Each structure stands twice: as structure tokens, then as C-alpha cells.
Length: 170
Image (cartoon, rainbow, N blue to C red; front, side):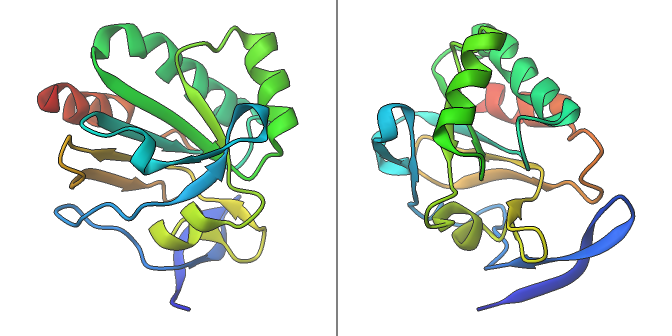
């Protein structure tokens, strides 16, 4: 398994990303995570759609919650874009968060069970078994068009750049 050390930090401490880091222009690997009702959800479940994947360490933190709320609000302006928020939170925690926050336009997924997304996209933090913060935008043909691995996990991603990338594809 590939290890990418020192590329990202958490509170200034260097961490190791496990898996193959995804790059623009590559075919987005299919992955399976756990969705609402403990049902498996995969990238294949969104054929012909632009997909924005918002990776967060945990919705129980301020920045992750803000990131998820932001994309839920922006969903109305994006048109036919599937927005997925993925973390290693348990599906039950994701459900509680969505209910409490009124999150109804973003599909929340748990990568807790198999870390399939984290490993295939190079977002799994070895030291914490959480996902690195970042954003991926995939076009209707399944090609990655935008990638951001947030360098310091306590910082926000570049929302505007990711949203602009998604809008260009609709």
C-alpha cells in the first residue's frame, strides 16, 4: 500500500496519507461506502451525473460541519450535481447530524467499515484512521476534473474553486 508522508498535517503535525492519491484527468475509481439505512452506496449509483465529493474527518467538528452545511446550501445553485459528503463517522452519527442541521441535499456516506474510498483516493490518514479534508469533482464521464487535498486539516477547503469546477461541467 502506498504511503504519502508529510503532505498533510493536523494541528501542524505531519500525517501519512494511505493509498494512491487521485489526480486530475484520471478515471475516478468506483468505491463503496455506507449510506442512509446502512445501505451500500457506490460511485456507480450516480451515472451520467457530475459528482462533487466532500471528504471530511468528522462532522462532529466545526470545520467539517461548516463544509457540509456550505455544500448543502450551494446544491441549489449547482443544478444536476450529486454532492457526497464522506467521512469515517458511523452512519448513525451522520444521520443525527443531518437531522439536527437540516442537511437534505447532500448524500452523507460512512467510509468507516472498509475505508474503500479513503484507500482508493488516497485520503485515509494512517495515524488517525480518519479521512483527510478535501474535495474531488468528477465529470459526467467519470473523469476527475478537480482535486484538493487540504494541507492542514483544521483549515477550510477552497469552496469557490471546487464550486466553479462543478458549475463548468453541468
